[in-house]
Length: 106
Image 1 (cartoon, one colour):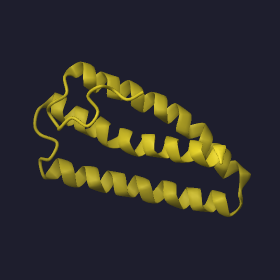
Image 2 (cartoon, helix red, strand yellow):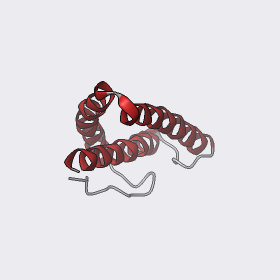
Image 3 (cartoon, one colour):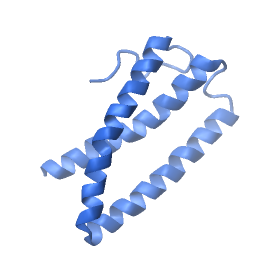
Image 4 (cartoon, one colour):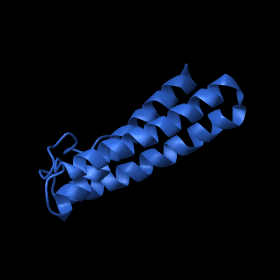
């Protein structure tokens, strides 16, 4: 399911790899959104925990990305930075899809 260039160092992906990661980010997001909304709609402690986790992950992801960009860790050039940003968020979204699916399946 993962793109063949996943785990590549910033700047090592070609544009096809960046586009592939963009596609996977959209696909994984499309799976995570209904899983999360279902959990939130059911209410209770699980919904509260999910809401807190969702907000804290977004703050962490944005903070980590800002530090990486400011520190030049994404490399330079449009391809390296675009690939680095998409790959960064794909890791978070994919992790949530795996976690939420496993929770659903028990």
